Amino acid sequence: MSGAAPASQPSPRRILVRGVNWLGDAVMATPALLRLRERFAEAHITLLTPAKLCDLSLQHPAINEILTFQTGEELFAVSRKLRDGRFDLALVLPNSPRAALEIWLARIPQRVGIARPWRSWFLTHPVPAHAGAAEMRKRSVGEIQRLVRDANIQHPVSSIQHPPAAHQCHHYLYLVAALGADPTPLAPRLVVTDAEVAEVAAKFGLADATNNSPVLLGLNPGAEYGPAKRWPAERFVGVTAYVQRHAHCRWVVFGGPADAALAEKIAADIRYETERPPTFGKVSPDLAVANLAGKTSLRELMALLKLCRVLVTNDTGPMHVAAALGTPVVALFGSTSPELTAPGLPGDPRHALLKSDAPCAPCFLRECPIDFRCMKSISVERVAAAVMETLNC
Image (cartoon, rainbow, N blue to C red):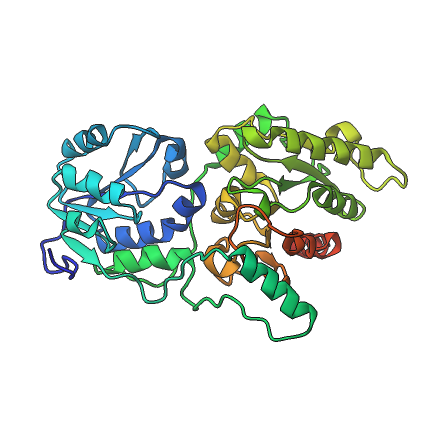
């Protein structure tokens, strides 16, 4: 094994990228894929990705081919697929031992990934961890209680500090830089055609009929990681009530099957608010909102997010998808940190990142052990103002 990257080797003709397993991470990895394409313009690049994420990378300019595996698919079955590809080099984006073992069993000659215990042996070129990397360290209940107590008596509050290069996109860029690629950040990029957008808009009854049609605004109230990342449902409704008083708009509620009940409750409340005096919109209650949670494929979700003028969202996968398609997002961060997982290119002014001022945030826990003060500290007025500013209203 060697810690140095294979820069001195002949340029690989066939490269395999072992992709990541989560939607948001997959989007944040796209700048690295673009830099890899720049570095090896003539190479055939294949992405190995979970089948559930396959549609995300369709038509992506950095990718020539996509291979998929199912959740729970047997290790040797995955490796057998890879042997047929006759790859010269494999880039392993996940840090797990399993991902490195898949590549080793596939007998790919050059195997590059981050050095970690129990997996470096499977890599020909284990790359030392990025000096600017930051772990999502979970706070203990005792630490949370201490921070809240100290803040209440006006003592100095210790906080988790993240270095400038802590964002997850830098992790993947650092890894491709080991192959000689440019590590300068790029905006994450996904591709959906205008024809796809038109087809999906027509399917769900969201196609513009006239120039006076309402603009589409999105709501993404769920979060797969856990309830600590979810802004209260009634506050999403409050934002729609405020914005509809000032803008001619229609709302689309997004989410997965697990979010269906939450999304329907929000949609019903929006319809109810639309009927209440004073009349504040030009859209009838029946047309004020479309609940599409659990009703779209990933590709359809992408097309609809591209159609939206703004997405109001928790820190979750669709937030990253929307930003990578060019849709501005108003993103809410309580238990998590925008320094690590902000949407789009870090610092992009199109996106509004609203952080909690709770002394215990970010805690990176799935559930709040106290009173959910991080998300409750983000007011309806603050979010609505960010939406209005994005709409230039």
